[in-house]
Amino acid sequence: SEDNIDATENAVSALGRACVALGNRNFLQNVWLKNLPLRNDEEEAQYCHKLLCKLVAGDIVEAENQPKILGMSSKKENVGEVIRIFQEITKYMETQKGNEFAIEIIDSETKPTIQQLMLKLKQMY
Image 1 (cartoon, rainbow, N blue to C red):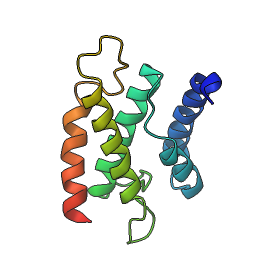
Image 2: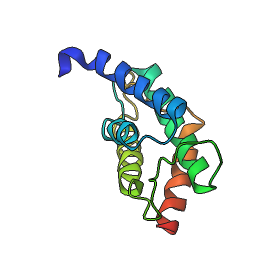
Image 3: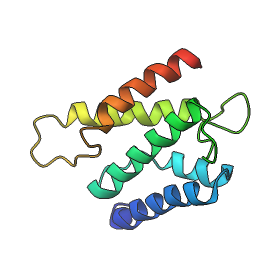
Image 4: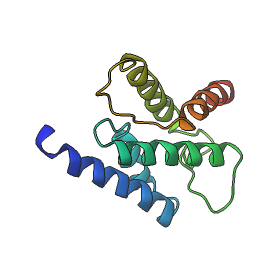
Protein backbone atom coordinates (compact mmCIF):
# COMPACT_ATOMS: atom_id res chain seq x y z
CA SER A 1 0.00 0.00 0.00
CA GLU A 2 1.00 3.64 -0.33
CA ASP A 3 1.40 3.87 3.46
CA ASN A 4 4.16 1.28 3.40
CA ILE A 5 5.78 2.04 0.04
CA ASP A 6 9.18 2.94 1.51
CA ALA A 7 9.35 -0.26 3.54
CA THR A 8 8.16 -2.26 0.53
CA GLU A 9 10.82 -0.79 -1.74
CA ASN A 10 13.51 -1.44 0.89
CA ALA A 11 12.33 -5.05 1.10
CA VAL A 12 12.39 -5.41 -2.70
CA SER A 13 15.94 -4.05 -2.73
CA ALA A 14 16.91 -6.59 -0.05
CA LEU A 15 15.45 -9.34 -2.25
CA GLY A 16 17.73 -8.19 -5.08
CA ARG A 17 20.72 -8.45 -2.79
CA ALA A 18 19.55 -11.92 -1.69
CA CYS A 19 19.31 -13.02 -5.33
CA VAL A 20 22.98 -12.21 -5.77
CA ALA A 21 24.10 -13.68 -2.46
CA LEU A 22 22.09 -16.90 -2.72
CA GLY A 23 22.44 -17.56 -6.44
CA ASN A 24 19.83 -19.34 -8.49
CA ARG A 25 16.68 -19.26 -6.40
CA ASN A 26 13.75 -19.01 -8.82
CA PHE A 27 11.25 -18.04 -6.16
CA LEU A 28 13.33 -15.10 -4.91
CA GLN A 29 14.12 -13.94 -8.43
CA ASN A 30 10.48 -14.10 -9.48
CA VAL A 31 9.27 -12.14 -6.44
CA TRP A 32 11.99 -9.54 -7.01
CA LEU A 33 11.19 -9.14 -10.70
CA LYS A 34 7.42 -8.91 -10.08
CA ASN A 35 8.02 -5.94 -7.76
CA LEU A 36 10.19 -3.96 -10.15
CA PRO A 37 10.52 -1.22 -11.19
CA LEU A 38 10.76 0.85 -8.04
CA ARG A 39 9.48 4.42 -8.30
CA ASN A 40 9.51 6.03 -4.86
CA ASP A 41 12.87 5.50 -3.16
CA GLU A 42 15.51 7.02 -5.42
CA GLU A 43 18.49 5.27 -3.82
CA GLU A 44 16.89 1.82 -3.81
CA ALA A 45 15.43 2.29 -7.31
CA GLN A 46 18.80 3.20 -8.79
CA TYR A 47 20.50 0.31 -6.99
CA CYS A 48 17.90 -2.29 -8.07
CA HIS A 49 17.66 -1.14 -11.66
CA LYS A 50 21.45 -1.08 -12.03
CA LEU A 51 21.66 -4.53 -10.41
CA LEU A 52 19.03 -5.85 -12.81
CA CYS A 53 21.08 -4.55 -15.76
CA LYS A 54 24.21 -6.20 -14.38
CA LEU A 55 22.45 -9.54 -13.89
CA VAL A 56 20.82 -9.45 -17.33
CA ALA A 57 24.11 -8.55 -19.03
CA GLY A 58 25.86 -11.38 -17.18
CA ASP A 59 23.14 -13.85 -18.08
CA ILE A 60 23.33 -12.91 -21.77
CA VAL A 61 27.06 -13.71 -21.86
CA GLU A 62 26.53 -16.67 -19.52
CA ALA A 63 28.88 -15.40 -16.80
CA GLU A 64 29.77 -17.98 -14.18
CA ASN A 65 28.87 -17.64 -10.51
CA GLN A 66 25.98 -15.34 -11.23
CA PRO A 67 22.22 -15.87 -10.90
CA LYS A 68 20.42 -16.77 -14.11
CA ILE A 69 17.97 -13.87 -13.90
CA LEU A 70 16.52 -14.54 -17.36
CA GLY A 71 15.49 -18.03 -16.26
CA MET A 72 16.96 -21.39 -15.45
CA SER A 73 15.73 -23.27 -18.50
CA SER A 74 16.72 -22.83 -22.11
CA LYS A 75 13.36 -21.08 -22.59
CA LYS A 76 14.60 -18.12 -20.51
CA GLU A 77 11.18 -17.73 -18.96
CA ASN A 78 11.88 -14.33 -17.36
CA VAL A 79 12.78 -12.46 -20.55
CA GLY A 80 9.26 -11.06 -20.96
CA GLU A 81 9.23 -9.86 -17.36
CA VAL A 82 12.63 -8.17 -17.74
CA ILE A 83 11.51 -6.44 -20.95
CA ARG A 84 8.34 -5.26 -19.15
CA ILE A 85 10.47 -3.76 -16.35
CA PHE A 86 12.78 -2.00 -18.80
CA GLN A 87 9.79 -0.65 -20.75
CA GLU A 88 8.16 0.66 -17.57
CA ILE A 89 11.40 2.35 -16.50
CA THR A 90 11.76 3.96 -19.92
CA LYS A 91 8.13 5.12 -19.95
CA TYR A 92 8.42 6.53 -16.42
CA MET A 93 11.55 8.49 -17.31
CA GLU A 94 9.90 9.89 -20.44
CA THR A 95 6.76 10.99 -18.59
CA GLN A 96 8.82 12.65 -15.84
CA LYS A 97 10.97 14.81 -18.14
CA GLY A 98 10.83 18.41 -17.00
CA ASN A 99 9.30 17.51 -13.62
CA GLU A 100 11.68 18.99 -11.08
CA PHE A 101 10.16 16.83 -8.34
CA ALA A 102 10.51 13.53 -10.22
CA ILE A 103 12.43 10.70 -8.61
CA GLU A 104 15.50 9.71 -10.66
CA ILE A 105 14.88 5.96 -10.73
CA ILE A 106 17.96 5.32 -12.89
CA ASP A 107 21.30 7.06 -13.06
CA SER A 108 22.96 8.40 -16.20
CA GLU A 109 24.92 5.15 -16.77
CA THR A 110 21.90 2.89 -16.50
CA LYS A 111 19.70 4.55 -19.14
CA PRO A 112 21.86 3.60 -22.17
CA THR A 113 22.51 0.18 -20.63
CA ILE A 114 18.77 -0.50 -20.47
CA GLN A 115 18.38 0.55 -24.10
CA GLN A 116 21.23 -1.73 -25.21
CA LEU A 117 19.97 -4.68 -23.18
CA MET A 118 16.42 -4.31 -24.52
CA LEU A 119 17.76 -4.46 -28.08
CA LYS A 120 19.81 -7.56 -27.30
CA LEU A 121 16.92 -9.29 -25.56
CA LYS A 122 14.52 -8.59 -28.41
CA GLN A 123 17.07 -9.87 -30.93
CA MET A 124 17.89 -13.00 -28.94
CA TYR A 125 14.43 -13.99 -27.83
